[in-house]
Length: 110
Ligand SMILES: [Zn+2]
Image (cartoon, rainbow, N blue to C red; front, side, top):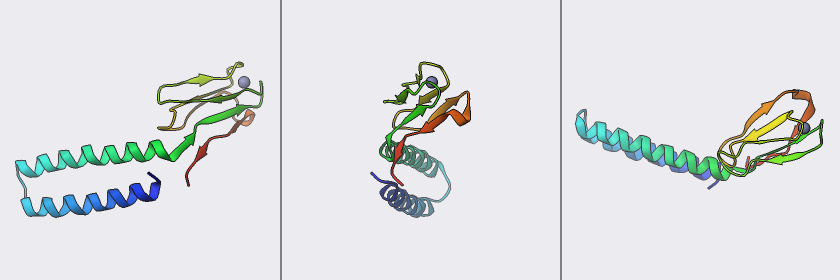
């Protein structure tokens, strides 16, 4: 799923839930509906985030090691400890000692 597909899906979801919420009016049924909405929206966001990141990686310009985080909790540090990447395909997290001594080589959908 690309960002555009995810956005369209979310947009339709908001409209669908808004209509249903207005039909129900305030009350416990509406509260349940809101909880369903959050669950579904988070699911779409997580799905979208996964497919947006193709490769989560960086090149250390101190030790010249190229490192890649494969999955969400895969925290990888280069051999000199200057740069660490984390988050896999879910998010791009960086731990950097010297900001000018690394190159981000990640691939993401625009
Ligand atoms: Zn290094």
